[in-house]
Structures are given as C-alpha cells and as structure tokens.
Image (tube, rainbow, N blue to C red; front, top):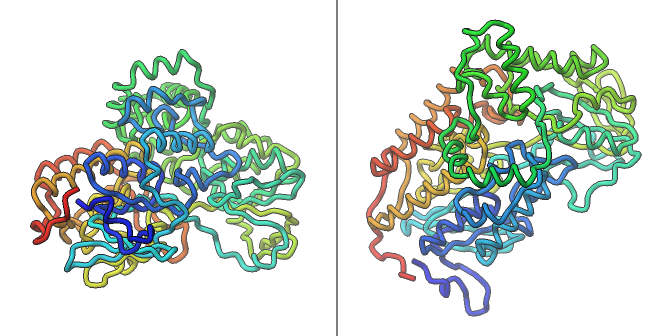
Length: 557
C-alpha cells in the first residue's frame, strides 16, 4: 500500500505522487468506488472536472431535468443509514434533488477529502515495466497508480450537430448538458429546440411555458409513456422502508434493475380485449412498468407484440394532439417501441403542441440547412429566433473515456483500439490495458437498466477483484484477447436477435457522424449479466490473465 504521506511533496503540492488507485469522475460510480476501495485500506484519488460531486446531475440543469427511474431505487442500496436518513419528495426526482442527494452521500461517507475538484484528467498511460499507470491533469499534476478506474459515465460527453453558420447566429445558444448554473432567461423569447428524445421531452413543456414562442425541430419522433409522477407521502415512504430488503433483492435479480412485477402472459395467447386491458393498466401505472406488460424481454424480441404496443401508444398520441397532421408527425413509425431509449412524459408533452405559440417542424422532411444571424433556415422556410437549444444528447458510451488520451501496453491508444468500435470483456476491462477498469463500460447493461443497480454491481465486482489480487499477490489483471472477442460477439449476437437492430439510435452510435455503428450496451439484462460476472469471479477470473506479484511489493500502510 502507498502511505498517505508519500502523496505529498515538500512544497505541499502533489507532484509525481503515488496512490493505489486513481478514479476519474465523482458521480454515482466514482463516489461508491472511492468508498469501497478506501474501506479495503487502499489509497485512492478521485479527479473531477466539476467543482462539486454529482456527475451527470451536476451538468444537466436544463428546465425539467428529471430521472426516469423511480426515486426509491435511484439511490445507493449498500448503506442502511443512508437509506434511513434520506427521503425523496417525488416518485421521479428532479435534478436539484438528485444532486443534493449525491452531495449528502459524499458528506455522509466523508468522501470529499480524497476528491480533487476542478481538475480534468488529460492523459493516462500504462508502463509495463513498473505495472503502473501515470495520470496527467490539466493543471500539470502527474500521479502514478497501480489501478486506473474510469467512472466517467455513459452519458457525459455532449454531442452537438455541426450546423453551418452557427457562429453567425446573433442570439444565444445552449446545450442541455452544459446548461448555465444560474439559468437562462427565456421569458418572452423566440426559442428553438432541436431534439425530441428523453431530454427534449422533459425540456419542451417547460420552455413552452416561459417562451414567447417555441419552435421544435423534430428529427425523430419518440414513444413517450406517461411517468405518472406525484409526491411521495409519509405512509408510502414508511412502506418502502419496511420492504427495502425485498425491493433491492428484486431489483438486483431483474432484467432492468427495477423491482417491478412482470406479467407472465404472452400476447400471442390473449385476445384483443385482454391485450388492450393489460396495456391500459400499464399505461395508467406509467413509467418503465410499461415495458413489463408481457413476459420478460418479450416486448423487444417479438415484432408482432411490439407492433401491438407501438400502435397502442400511437393511438394515445392521436387522442392527445388536436391537429391530425401534427399528431401523425409525432407518432413514430420508423422504429419499434423500446428499440431506442424509451422517454417518459412527465406532464403535457404532447398537449404542448396544441398551443398556438408552439410550432412543430419535421426536419426529417424539411432539414435545417444553416443558421442565419437572426434564426434558422430549413430547406423551405426561415424561423426567427432569439435563443436556440440543442437537446441533442451525447457521444454516448465511449465519448467521455475517449475525450482524453488513454495509452495501454506498447503505446497502443484506446482510440486506436476502439477505432472500429469499443471492445471490452464484460464492459469491465480491455485487452492491452492492464489494471484498467471501466465502470458501466461498453458491453455492460448500463443504460438498459436502472443505473445505480448496474453501478453497484460493477463497483463491488471491481473491489472484490482487487481484494482477490492483493490476497494472492497478483500484480496485474487483463482480459485475454480471446475472451474480449467472444464477449463482443455475444453482445452483438444478442442485440441482432432483438428489435434493437430495427432502430437508428445512440445505443449504436448512430447519432454521431463517423462513429462506428455497433450496439454498445449488453442487452441480456442485469440478472443474466450479474450471473455471468459472478461465475467469472468464482472461476478465478476466467477470461482474465493475472500475473504474479511484483518483485518489490508496494509499501504497506
């Protein structure tokens, strides 16, 4: 172990320091990883480019920003005192409340003392001779560590389309993932929003209430199911706390990391009235429960079942939108329900288009050609605007990790390794990059689940792996090339056999021009994935190569 004293030069600055592990990012993943490794007696340093904890919930402060997992399961499950001392106000918490929760957790666990804020990692390089990583930051600091752990998140690096003329636009423009912390005054302004995914669907009703006029530039329509958000009362919270053990067990052993009951019926065995009744029941319950209408995975594996569900949602859209032409523009027909990230409607998204001061522009049929000094020009019209908002999402899954230079054995960069798409083993490790772990990395369930459940599973697996290495004197761990190749093939095969292949989505990197189009999350579900990871660990980390103890072991703390 490296002692805490060894991390400080005589001047009080940390220069060429040494720690057991460096973690990049202080969101849900990085905070728990720091806590677990510190519990095991390791010295850990976390680098965070923001000035506070929170990760994606620090940056995404746009109006209406809210979680799509229910609050009582969108939190840590490993600390009973933390569960007892925090109480959520709503079924789906807003960004400020989630950020406050993560601040509370960081203080409760005394984590801030090992986090360097306002410090961005710019490079990380592996040295095979010493079996260590050297991490460099934007303030010139360099630190060596035995383990290098990415906790940068799946949805962290914003993506903005490269429209011609944006520099000529004399109004203001913003990206939702970098929303100013002091807010934006939209009152009475002519506002344009591009993007109608999960973020846009949260944002658009809020902007419509504030703007003088709103123009929505829709690239792809989406299926938005009601969230049915509401306050949580004391009686309901008491019941949740009383049943938390059962709730967490059910969540961990589910496909989505959510403790919902799944119907055992197959749509093929039901008549039309029975199907309609089941769908209406789930529609009224709201949220991701809608994905549990039939047998596990059936919604995304059976095209006929999916089309029944998709048409049910389209009929709901037509009921809620007054203008038939607008309703059809908003009703998706180009992809099956759930094959892209299923958005939620937290209140009045579709009804927003019934307002006289809101206009919908289909940019699939009428593309944006350029920005002008006073607005946006499409193929056949011009829209005068004061403010433009990009709700265009992220360079998902890989963007944040490739945003800085990561170099493995023999000078191989991660960007080169992933030039044709990400390759990992279990989404946890990468061949050629020893002692590097990626929390919720590509080819793990991650964004197809309730993220805290996937994060906890990964953090605990990584911590247990490091403990295993220390107990047996292993120096390094790295996936074999064969296991990595087989895992990538298995992930792609599962996705190809599901309806994910019927959609152009950020799951496949298709929202970013030039990005390799490969399905990146593991689609087999959290329960299956957890079993696989457990078997790998039980079989002495089958699929990984472990090397022997270093000739000169690290100093004991």
